[in-house]
Image 1 (cartoon, helix red, strand yellow):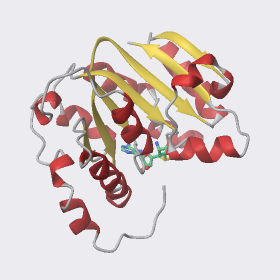
Image 2 (spheres, rainbow, N blue to C red):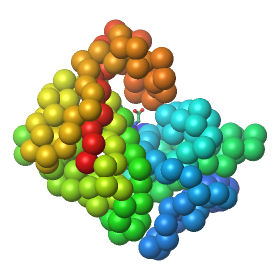
Image 3 (cartoon, rainbow, N blue to C red):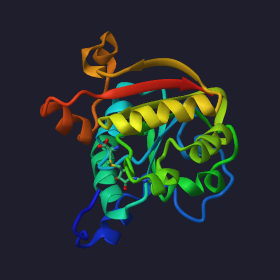
Length: 214
Ligand SMILES: C[S@@+](CC[C@H](N)C(=O)[O-])C[C@H]1O[C@@H](n2cnc3c(N)ncnc32)[C@H](O)[C@@H]1O
């Protein structure tokens, strides 16, 4: 996600600091950052935060952590979440950082569920290792998830979808559910849309999705 540098970005992020899990990140259990412990879910590459904010609103009994590596994008997500927090919701926190460092941020087996929404497809073969469903990343998620934890994945990119299914299988994960047209499935009734998903589906593009168990 490219974007012009935000004016006063650092100040705007600082104004939301109560929602930020900041460096240096400790070995603290992620539930320690919330008022009360709950099942805890992680979104990687949250972009401007529509999904994380929507999920936190829809599931008040789940604690959510959303990670984004571009601080100017995370700033918009933080501001969206702050507006919700002012209405009394307090089950969403953010990490500004790269997924490749996740295991240094949180203890093993911290999360019940991980979401990857419209991750960058990195279509060139030489960049396959950067795809967030590459087996290298799946091993990070295996460490972070509780045994039997779930990964939920959505994309508009057929190539990334097919690559991901191969990687899930190579990593020995159980594919619980998959579709090549999420919005035509009964599961769509519970679906919270991301910014990218809204744009792609308005253009009539099908949304691919899979749920896998570790
Ligand atoms: C294509 S955008 C999708 C944003 C959002 N999930 C959506 O569906 O609207 C992908 C986002 O993931 C972030 N991202 C990509 N690789 C990442 C990584 N390794 N760690 C954290 N964030 C990452 C990008 O900065 C970008 O904001």
